[in-house]
Amino acid sequence: MQNNQLVRLEEVSRVYAAGSAAQVRALDGISVGFEQGTFTAVMGPSGSGKSTLLQCAAGLDRPDAGQVVVDDVDLGPLTEKALTELRRDRIGFIFQAFNLLGALTAEQNVGLPLRLAGRRPDTAEVRAALARVGLGERAGHLPSQMSGGQQQRVAVARALITRPKVLFADEPTGALDSSSSRTVLKLLRTLVDDRGQTTVMVTHDPVAASYADRVLFLVDGRVADEMPEPTAQRVAERMARLESDREPDLEPAAEPVRIDGGR
Ligand code: ADP
Ligand code: MG
Image 1 (cartoon, rainbow, N blue to C red):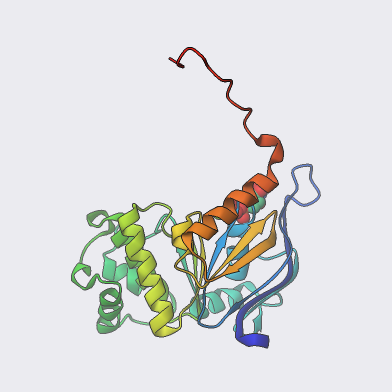
Image 2 (image 1 turned 90 degrees about the vertical axis):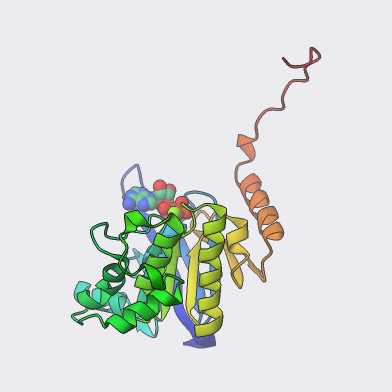
């Protein structure tokens, strides 16, 4: 694999409702790579294909054309069973909605991927994973007894318990207040810096994107631009230009000038 790319998409297209009048080309021949040990943010207008990109890269969805390679394995020819095993062993995924099981404690949620892989979770290993995300004292708590930020940190611990090669996160801070977001983003950054955890995160938030090493900007299922060493300010400016380039007809008409004080 060239340039140490842990994940590579080559000319990937994903077309929903292909052939019908409602056909949507969510990914349009996209080629992109994610290098080992790096943190990439994926941004773009709503509907630009960010979630579809993550799902295809993570083997949760299959492209209609092109190739996805993860850790030197071409996902295309894999059977569903082999794909499920590869996801279980090498890929972690976190979602905006946390997706914890409400009837299970933090500890049981974190141990779940090991159970699914046919292993009995080792208590010390699970506790260490919870301690790693700052929740060592919360092992016995249910999701309903934790804040959103704490639940998302449990989800991070769960995603990493199998030591996946790559962690995908689809708007992981989308449902969190800014203080909880910061805690989760710092955690993701620390995992990249300390453990070389290759991470790919979709976000709408320029501040969240600034925690990454690089930002990819998607428009209409393609990479429109990328930015190394992003700052929140430059990302916000780039996003504003992308949105205005894309929708020139949707500019609101200028407000008429009011001379009566506007009340
Ligand atoms: P984003 O995450 O950037 O908002 P998505 O990847 O979710 O974008 O969607 C890209 C495009 O594909 C959108 O036009 C969306 O409506 C469409 N799309 C996504 N999922 C489906 C689906 N399951 N069926 C039909 N169209 C879909
Ligand atoms: Mg999305």
